[in-house]
Structure formats: C-alpha cells, structure tokens
Image 1 (cartoon, rainbow, N blue to C red):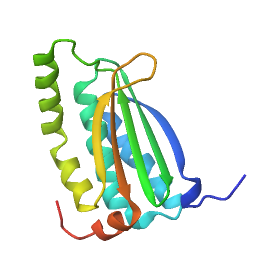
Image 2: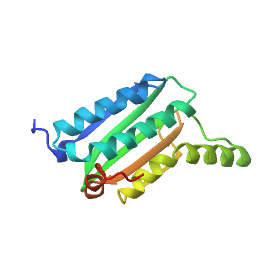
Image 3: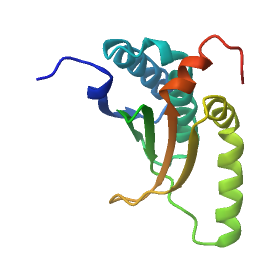
Length: 150
C-alpha cells in the first residue's frame, strides 16, 4: 500500500444528515488533508466541505449524506450527495434551486477566490437525490489560507 501523499487522497464518508454531520465532515477532512501533506489548503477545503455538508443537512429528506474527497491533477474535488430529489414541477424546481444557490453563497465566494468551480444537480446514482460538488485548485486553495478573502 502506498504511503499517504496528495496523489493518494481518496476518501468517501457516509455521515449523519443532522447537526453533527458538518462538524464531523470538517474534522475528518482536516485530518485527511494533514495526513496526505495538504495542510496548506486546509482553510479553503474545510470551508468548502462545511458549506456543502450544511446545505445537504438543510435540504435532505434522508438521515444520511455521502461525502467524497479526492485529489486529482492538482485539484481537490469534493462531492456531497443527499436525498432531496428534484421537483417535477418546473416552478418548484426553480424555487428550490434558487434557495440552494442562496444557501451556497459563501461556498461560491470561497471557490471563486480559489479560482475553482462548483455546482449542483440531480444525482444519477440509484436512489436519486441531489449531487453538489466543488473543484478547488491546489494553487488557489494555498493562496486562500489566511488571506481574509470571502
């Protein structure tokens, strides 16, 4: 088994979709980043994880959420799946998307400051729900630490 390094960062967690979920997600990601030599991106990535997890807890109808953290090609990729299915009525779907975008406003600021990308949409996995994601470039996340941007 290879030693932990940025290239071997690949974790998936199933977490409670309750008040403790975002705290547990942030703590687990903090430890994983440190173990893989990525402590210099902790501020940005932990903020991203916390925002995605909190949004998942707010919207999900289920009791769990799924978080994936990967490092590939100089980017940290965070994906959160939760159980809130897309509304079939277009007006309800639009209103729900607007509420989710508003809930992820801080996430958008952090990801933009790191020159990354983010979004959300219907999950294609069995069981449906919503998939939210953020791609945070290593170089941008390093520059974010202690910068006071947001």
